[in-house]
Image 1 (cartoon, protein in one colour):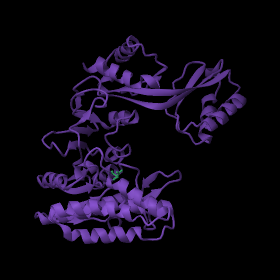
Image 2 (cartoon, rainbow, N blue to C red; image 1 turned 90 degrees about the vertical axis):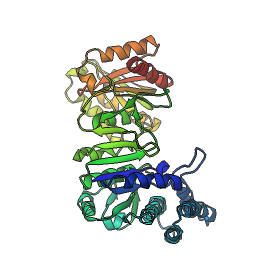
Image 3 (tube, rainbow, N blue to C red; image 1 turned 30 degrees about the vertical axis):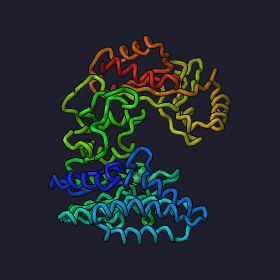
Image 4 (cartoon, helix red, strand yellow; image 1 turned 135 degrees about the vertical axis):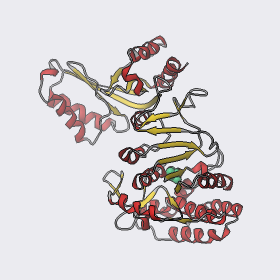
Length: 449
Ligand code: ASP
């Protein structure tokens, strides 16, 4: 069985939905389809989720939100009309209108319940259309199916482990299961949504729960590319990539899948196939546990801004037992997670995200490090970008880091720091933010031209 997930651009209008249903029904193994809410039809369009957020905000601030509600209903009714399934519009309209007419008791719960209506309505619509064209399909409600979520302190959404057993029951369904992405329910029965783009996570959870042979994630690009296509024209397509490589690249700004979507697939070893709804003949990119082949030495190159380095030096630091633990616990006390930690004999750099390391926290941390650890110097280097080259083939190849560093130095880019993890699948360079894109292009030229 294959679990297939279609993103918002694949469901933006009736023409796209017809393509989706054609893809789905062309392979009898595609038994489960996870849908996003209709996305943008063109670059100036608004995603249904954004229309719903505007509607929720209007209601939360005490306005009637009639215009916002109309915009949402219009999107769905135009799709239903074109697909000739206006009969489902009544139930979609009723569900949306009833949900947003509830009194706002808790703004964040109200927002989640409203946001989820895009995926929920889309799933009802797609199930109706599949039946209309002669395929037995059922809309699956995440509450009935048992997709249980919990919001942790700090707002992160976690899946409750029993969800996997609950969802495994869907394998007994004889019809195609049309499952709305992006949300589940708390044990108390309230809707909880993932962060934006979260339908990818729903798809991965279902693929894991059902032990799918593959998790197909249909979007609007033929492949994952070796570099951001906005930076380089016609970049090298990646046909195969491991979970680990993908994770490293996602960290440095690759945004093909939701960052958390790989984990459920990784745990159960389900291969993920990125495909293009607008070009189904392309085989796309396979994300796997183990590579079958290497098309290139480097798999991908990515860069992300928004980092800073806290540099600490203390004479004979390497002899002082527990020094690093103390530094880390001071940072942990501020609730900040550490990104990297390149070190020398008597110095250590702690790389943090600038968004976490606010000036207020910086002041407190530096004060404590200076006072409690008696260091010689502590300074902060802000406005850094992390640029990464990632590839499992690099592990057995001599000189990759040298090639990269030479290319960057020839381009006149100063390296603020270098870090290579023990796994040798990635090398990270810290550069000034203004050099981020230039550094990515320089490295791409070195390894792919
Ligand atoms: N519709 C939601 C969003 O726009 C979730 C998703 O599409 O994955 O973020």
